[in-house]
Length: 413
Ligand code: FES
Ligand SMILES: [Fe+2]
Image 1 (cartoon, protein in one colour):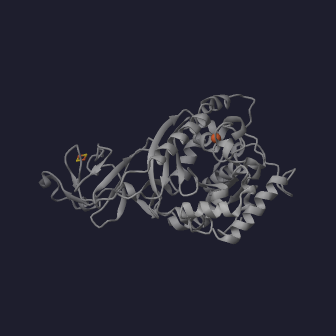
Image 2 (tube, rainbow, N blue to C red):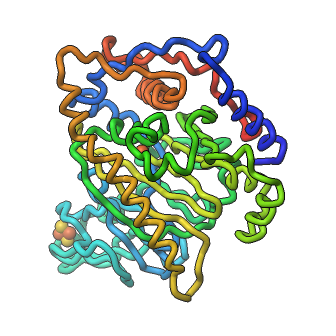
Image 3 (cartoon, helix red, strand yellow):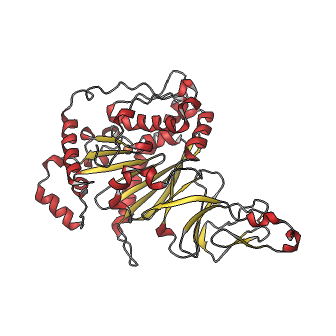
């Protein structure tokens, strides 16, 4: 983010503070059909057309420092994926499915290996996924198809230290997918995730994520925590291509911040990028479509992954992501930050399962969205765009009313 963009965002925050009605021309948004959060058929559509075709954040290269270090992921409760660093230092992704009789190759969830040996009959693959040895090879000696029996690869690309996978071989590359977000968020590319926490909540993944893409609720849900720090009335939201969005929420009293104090804070945290002054004054958060949120602080951010398990269950994984602390002891404040964030999450999640049940009411047609909450509507319309609106049952469609607000570069707001 450059200095001019920061200036324009500051002015826009001031506009938000003083407006007494929706911005000129802003549409009244229709309700989001409730079946989108409760219908197993819509869930299947979303899995096939969105999750099987989007770039999904899976892990960071900090977790795969040695050749052969690996992790097995089953985030969505489906076929497991292995991420592993090869002998050529390339980090790859494979289905954890043996090409002999389909057993799970690796049973340990994490470790370091010289090769991958299936725990059923010991078919063995190298770190690049090629089949290199099978017991009693004579039984297959005349079978030319053996050469195609390597582990099935999954597309795997990195943005800085952050690794994404895509189940669709024909998907655009990751950098194109991220678009302006890649430039806008570039300051965070090499940060290091730590303090992973996981919880499974009996709620649809979008009921869950949509509670974090607005801060309209902070006065009610977080009066003694979040609401002490940020002021939702000055929120500025930006929509990017491919469903991504950004929300900037000014800190309480940010407008009164003396330039000298801002300068001192930047020096203390050794922040030099042009967008850093805005992070002294505000919280900058992205929705990396579909299922990642990154609310940022000054020098790091919180990473939130929302994994749909079924229509009513979500795996929520959170990390604190901070500057690398090298080989020494991790600064204790990172753990404290994770602890604070967990308390805030408790405040957010205690109500969610009740919301999911409440959505069964035959008289509730679906969420009503105000101007401040427009990123929710944008997330929903982006799902339909990716699914292909014609495939969505007519009574569940979301009209793309926010398309005209989508910006194309990191300098647009
Ligand atoms: S299923 Fe893997 S070696 Fe038989
Ligand atoms: Fe919240």
